[in-house]
Image (tube, rainbow, N blue to C red; front, side):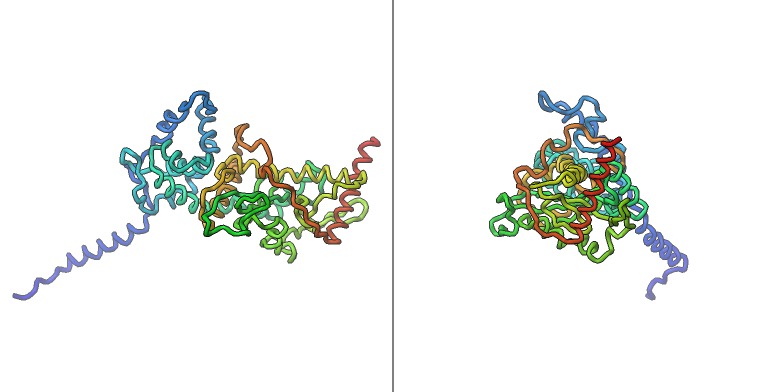
Length: 403
């Protein structure tokens, strides 16, 4: 018997079916209706009064910020940044104890709680009713997504924005053409014996990774670099950064020169502590021995501006306590991403206008126990510019006294 022939009609239907299939593959991913959406009510009931004398605020909105470091509006914004990434891939077993898929909101909440508290994955999981492996998966997926989607929250300012930054520094500290403040901190960790080396062992005999950052007048990070071993000096880290290479090549801190009343030219610069070299674009304080009146005035104003960076690190390590606790055998290839995302979250909080709760920032220095490093490198042009600034500040002080 001859084989059955397909009709033209069936062929047309087959083509339509194939077309529908191909179109369906580009439809944006949609969250399953079986996801858990009431996560906050469940979490709040379970954790708001879990311990006697708890420091959790009684107000629900403040309690939300206590647990996740952000307001509900900022939380929703963060969810919008990572939503597509978190639902575009199969959840791979990301379910709660009742068998429902985790909503994007609950995934973000789990990741933020892990980063904010620095508590173990087991402890964080228990507070949400999920297992340790789920916390691990969710947190890393969130970090990957935010690292990619929130890049615009950490970038060097354009010329217009930089003019605003310089104006604020001048109004607050009297520093003309100052573009920011730089500092560095150690992220302490334990390492397996096979990975330990002198490079990772810092001056306080801790294994650590360095984070260096430049902040503006609002303590927003403008540039960061991390991943370098804690055994390096901050001056050496600076020299290895792309930021330093751009400055040395005239491609960064290359805006308009300010001419002072005495005719001295002041180029764009940042301020840093004594651990950094004195350069034309990085101004450090005078040595504390044998200070003249003008030097003392300069050091006081310089320190006030530099403390913005110190406070920024105290805030980021206080808000995202995972950075302030000893990390247990982290993957050194993944740790820089964790650090970067904490800095992105720090900036998002500022950009969204959130006010931190009073007890969030660290009460002491962000690097307790670490002694001050001293760098003896002095560039003659940097010395001249520092002297000109000191003279300018002292003249301004004398005029103010005479009035």
